[in-house]
Length: 89
Image 1 (cartoon, rainbow, N blue to C red):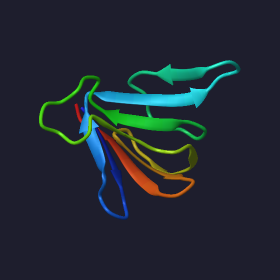
Image 2 (cartoon, rainbow, N blue to C red):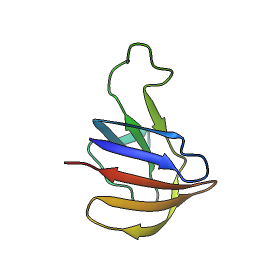
Image 3 (cartoon, rainbow, N blue to C red):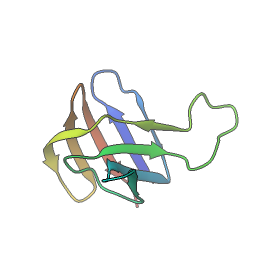
């Protein structure tokens, strides 16, 4: 289980999906069960539509800086926000 929260207002999502998105030479590249790193956007939430929920996942803009990195928690900065990503076993 993964969690992604924006610091300024607590917006974000949690679920079994943590995908790193990056632009390849010809198309969008994805990496499943990924940890945040500089140069990718993170998408965290559910792979499937959820009943009675307003959203299925939360996605960041590109990560520009890692502020703190631990085994199960990474705090990072994007172009417009600071996020905390967590992994729960």
